[in-house]
Length: 142
Image 1: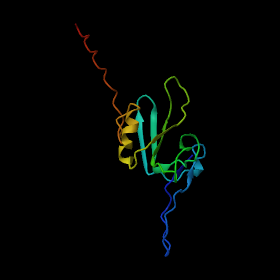
Image 2: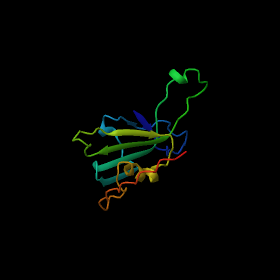
Image 3: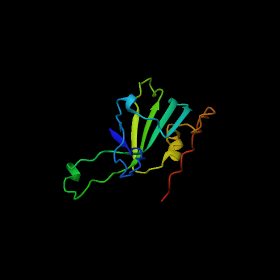
């Protein structure tokens, strides 16, 4: 469960912006707000791959575990949340979505690189070409 940064307050009196916005629960798609970036592409090995990214998400930290001895207010650690889902896995296995979190914010432009790791060209407008096999490296002689 992660939270977004929350909307800015636009009241005449102003005030502090909200620290914690809406809750995004992984198992409840109706709690997901609109992703900041979406990439869909066809892959040769996994079928259609879809990556959704939400920017500036953060966990709500509590004063326990590693934060037990922290003095003062707990920090907000913003990052980018990515959900990667593929159509099928090799061997006709049913895939589950993979959730990734990076402490890097504003990473939505780099999201196109996530589906490329699944064996595609990262483009949704054309089918991918099969990768050519690399020649083995010669063994070093000493």
